[in-house]
Amino acid sequence: MPTYTLLGQGVVRLPFILETSLGHEISINGSGTWFTSITGRGTGAEGLTTYLADHFFEEQKGKGFEYRKGALIDYQSYVNRKNEFPLKDSAGGTTELPRPSAMERG
Image (tube, rainbow, N blue to C red; front, side, top):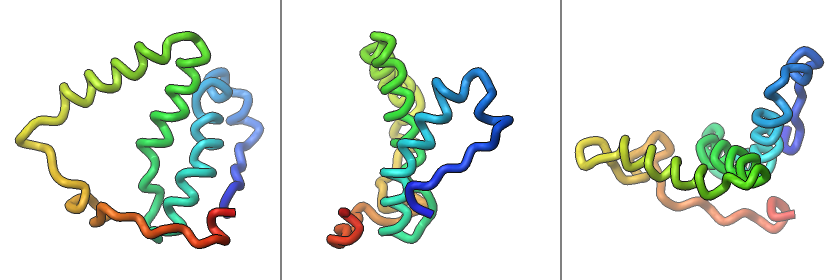
């Protein structure tokens, strides 16, 4: 159900939800739902959505630069010649996304 997120009362009351998970859920409604609807393969945008939501919250605190720098350092620390692979070899199996139709673009 695109653009629909349901969070139970018990979840919304958790102290970290408003500063973490809620932003992620709102963000995934746009990017993740669109990505899933055009590819038919799960929420391939999870990583991007997490980055965007987390970056937004850090930017609000004046720490956007530090967040971006940390993300790049983490990436460089993990990815190397032995474990890198082209996107076409990932679970999604493609480097090209189909263009959304006029209806999907809204």
